[in-house]
Structure formats: structure tokens, C-alpha cells
Length: 447
Image (cartoon, rainbow, N blue to C red; front, side):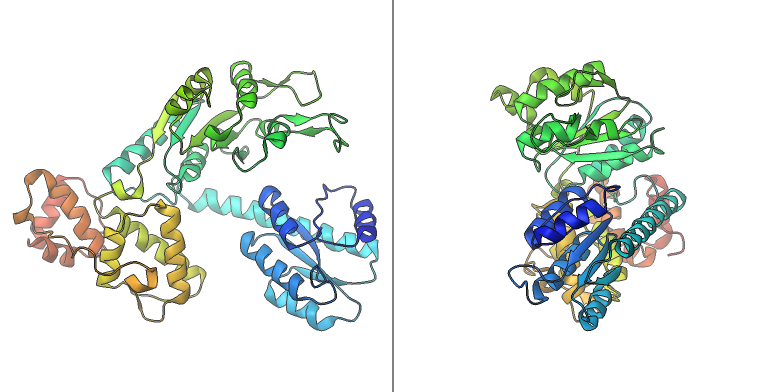
């Protein structure tokens, strides 16, 4: 509920006793609550400070909410007779609107319906994912290091082994954690993620373990923690290296005993959950610096999966990933492109991508929105066009043990077209087909 009037806040909180109600008074507070809780329904007043008498701040808040969590149902509350701004809000993407003065019965009906529709859409999305998506969807594994990562995920997923994912920021740790869940017998249960670095230390314990009524000021009811919510499913602890030492001992006890005690409680609650952890830190260094418990490290790293940064993924992997992202964002923003220009291809391949996949996503999304031509150029990506030239892919010029990598790169540059790939390699199509079979390289037979 985004509302700056304390009286109306109290009235509406009383009206929605069947829901967990989060309150924010301005745009910054609303976005903070949204990032932390992702509520299915938002009830938002258009008149927010510092423009409480106008609608500019309310409209800006609405646009940011929809950009951050598009599935959230936003119900806009407008002034009496303000039909124009109500219609404008719906055009932007609001689910519905309600005009003051507030009639709680009518408003409750609108909120109940919005919540119901959100739940139906969520269930429908889960069904579509089960029917049509690969458990490793979103992972482009054209390079040998990433193929090895995928093989490990497929082996580990059916087990209950506590798994540690190590990799730089933006390498796709959460994507792999979800793949571990999707390939496991726990797929029909919940996948609960919590970022240990995003929640203040004084709140993280209650977020993980829950709390009893009266455990601290503001604890007005018994609340299960994230661990209990993940019962039967998978708990993903992202940025585990940032967990405070005081909490590491309690987490270690849970991993050993598989029981939790809520803050302020004494009852031991058994929980059956598969734990996956991730960090971009070197935990062995953290242990030496007394920032991480050695016994906890050994407990969470029964299986350790190291995810290579994007700069180490060869074989045309960067270009294949870029093309995949281009296709996705082109559909999302209703744009049409024929691919990357030659300088765009070179920029994608030669740039070091310090921000990894997340940085590539952001640059390609921006290019899709702003590009004016039919091809995405280096300038559209915001990258230098004067990098290395296209590498030589002629098999006569490379050693025998590099043939497989050269073929993958040629297929990437040729967008899967066998004739073009053969031309780049300086060989005939039949010869290329023989080499594809020899190295068991996947290709589209229709090309």
C-alpha cells in the first residue's frame, strides 16, 4: 500500500486483515518494499510527496513498479472525478483504478479479484514452463567449460547434496540454482531465494528462521522464516560469503540437525530442504581472515561448481549468447533485426565483459531499444569498434587440436549456416559435415 495519509493507512490496514499489508509513504519506500517482498498486489495513491497535490510522482512510481515487477497488479487510487488520470494509469499498465472517497467493501472486492488473477497467471506460467522449457533454459553452453558445468548440474540435481556455486557477479549463479531445483525430485515444491548481502544484519536472522509473536518490537504475530517456507523444496542462499559470523553458527546447526528455532521461540521445527549456496567471494581467503567459518564452508561445499566468467567461454559462446539475447529482447520490445553488423560481432567477441552475462543483457537490451538500423552495431552496444579483426578460421592455418573450437566459432559467426561456416573455414560442405560428426558438434540440419 503506497499512501502518505496516516489516517487512510490505518483505515485500509484494518480493511485488509486477511492479507499481509506492507506500507510505503513515497516512491523510494515503495520500490524498496517491492524489491524485498515482490507483493502480488499494490494499492497506490497517485498523489505522493513531493507532489502530493499533483500526479507526476504517482505516475512515475507506477511506471517504475511495472518496470521492476511487470506481473504485479497495481490498483491506482485517484481523486474524486479524476477520470482522466485514472484512464492514463490503466493505459500505462495499471490493473485497475478506484476513485475516492474510499468504500472499503468495494475496494476489498477489487483487491481480492486482482490477487486471484495474479495467482491464476502465476499457476499458468508454471504449467507453461513445465511443458515447454528445458531445465537448463537460459544457459548457452557452447564452450567446453560451460558444457562441463551443465554435466555436473545434471548429475548433482537428483541428489540432496548441499551445493556451492562459485562465480563472478553476473555469471548466472541463480539460473544454475534454479536448474538444480528443476531437475530434482523437489521440482513441484518451492524454490525460495534469499540474498544474504541485501538484507541488514539485524533482519537477516528473522528472515531466515522466522520469529514468534512478541520476540521483538513490531513482532505482532508468529511468522515462519524463509527456511520453513522452503520445506520440501530448495533454499537458495545467494551471497553466502556476506553472511554475518553471528548467523553462520546458527546456519551450521540447521545444516547439521535440519531443525530451526524461530527468534524468540524454543520449539525445534524439523525442515526437509535442499540447500544451494552461491558467492562471488573466495571463501578460503575469507576463512583465513576470520570472516567465514571453516566448518560451515565444508558443510555447504559437499559439491562445488565453479562457473567460468564470460571472457573464458570460447568457441563462439559469447556471440551465440548475444544472438540469443538479441532474439529475446527483440520479441519483448517488438523490434526486428537481422543480427549484428561485422563490427558488432567483433565487439561482442573481443570485449572482456567484466560484468559477465548481466552486463551483456543490459547492453543488448539498450541496443534493441535505441538502435535505428536493421543490424546491431558496436556503437549501438556502446563498445569500441576498433578491436581485433575477425580471427582467422581457416583450418589450414590452425593446429589439429584446435579444429573443434574453430568450427564452433565459424558456426557462431555464420549464425548456424553450414555453407557460410564452410567458406569461413576454407573447406567444402561435405568436409565440414564429416568434421561435425567427428567432433559430435550439434548443428541445425535445416541450414
